[in-house]
Amino acid sequence: MKQYFRLVLVAFLLAGSLTATARFNGNNREAPAFYAGLRAGVGASMYYNLDDPVGLGTPVGGLALGIKVASFPLYVETGAYYMDMGTRFKDRRWYYWDRESYYSGRYHDYDDHSHAYGRRYDEDRYKYKLRNQSVMVPLVATYHLYAGEKIVIQPFTGFYGSYGFDNEKMDFGLREGVGVTFSHFYVGLGMNIGLVEQKLETDEAIVRDGLHASAFLTLGINF
Image (tube, rainbow, N blue to C red):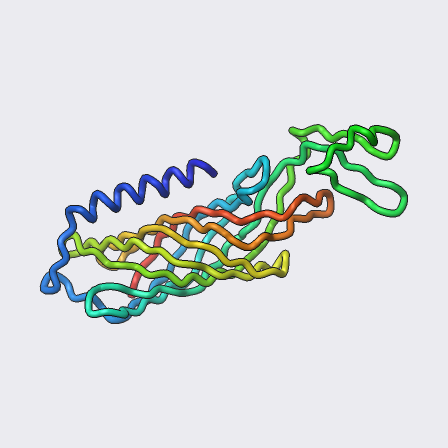
């Protein structure tokens, strides 16, 4: 997962370098008042406040819609995307249970309960995958910087809202990234940082609530 975030950082640095040499000229290429685009790609999702976060690979895809909101090429972009906003994680501690209930003790020390009711799981064997099929709706501001006749650099910043069908809960967070269009073809790289705690629970483990983070790489076409 850290590699994905490094890629995002490199993309920001590259965008800054290109921006420094890009020249906006209204006669060079007219900024459209509206655009729509299809996006598809890959992402990695995790929960960044856990002790041992592990990225969960996921396809990403959806529709982007942009509207020009100023006399210069400043746009507001929204749309709708599919993404699995789940995670993978390890459980290193004890499980403890009795006849009536079952408790997960990831964040508690159960050394005092090391008797017939509990057992220590092997930390390398018990790794869990938590899926959260989600629909995400971004709302970002993006400025279009023209570098030549056909290349447009599109840094964006803003927010997202999402609904997870597996955990049946809303999420809200920050969305940052950069896109580049070559004629009508689009390449985008970015990240989402969730701000709403999500309950993490499987049939085998219950851990403390987590905060979503993801990185994504998408390809697409604008109309």
